[in-house]
Amino acid sequence: MTRLIIDTDPGVDDAFAITLAALDPGAELLAVTTVFGNVALPATTANARRVLALCEREDVPVAAGADRPLVHPQPHRAHHAHGSDGLSGRSAALPNSTRAARTAGAVDLMARLLDEADEPVTIVPIGPLTNIALLLASYPELATKIERLVVMGGAVHGGNSTAAAEFNIWSDPEAARRVLVGESVPCVLVPLDLTYRCAVGTGWLDTLRGSGPRGAALCALVPDYLEHYRAALGWDGIVLHDAVAVAEALRPGILDGVSYPLDVDCSFGPSRGATIIDRRRGGPHPAGTAQTRAVDIAMDTDLDGLREFLLAGL
Ligand code: BDR
Ligand code: CA
Image (cartoon, rainbow, N blue to C red):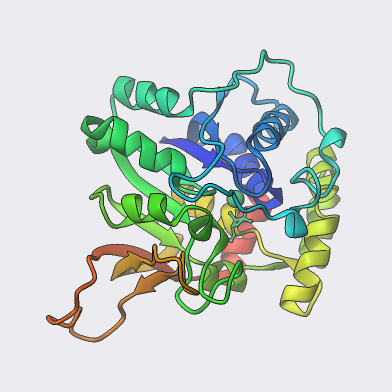
């Protein structure tokens, strides 16, 4: 049984990712914590609660966390991809949560769950890393209770938010650097390079839509997102970045990782938020000044097998 916490900013692909974890019979989803990101925190929190209601998993606690980055005063948003409310403007079509709203306490909830856990817990951050940085800074003694972090973020070759940076890292580079470089919790990074290769087409979406009311409800959240990716991919499909990371959390090893030294650019120059992955043979040059640590970077998978796993799980 995989015990996991998802830290998220729903977000269309986050909605698919949460659903995958919430429905997996081999997983114990301990909590969903929310962070600013694709849209503002109140909307990401409301969206997370609605997605759990869709999955009939309102037993899973939801708590809201950071509403802005650690340092940079102005949060970035991704309305251009995820629509006005984060779910292609269709969030109201999802069932309303019937549970009383918990509007704060993400970090404390994670800490309590880790403290109480008999076995290590996997945390899957699929938004900006602000909550995770705060967790590790506030409760360093709980780091050993984290089995691993499976992080959707970063890029080996070029970003999506800027030419250099991927959205989740760009949204809070200082938090990302703290978590990915400044800590020693085992970590798998699922970068854009792989998530783009796992894109699913409209045929895949049609099959999901036909699978039943929940599949149809998920597909109803896709229109703005599909429009965005039509332009980005040049074909009819969407990229389920966050669901790829959740797949690895649920089935360790479904993605093939390679360990590379990594750093995060926290400068205010054009490559702010870039993940700097050192793929030189022989490791870092001794004269290098960057502070890095080795992180498993997910580089490959059986693409069709992964798409089938997502479809079956959703
Ligand atoms: C990441 O950014 C967000 O827009 C997605 O939800 C995903 O977590 C991809 O760069
Ligand atoms: Ca996300």
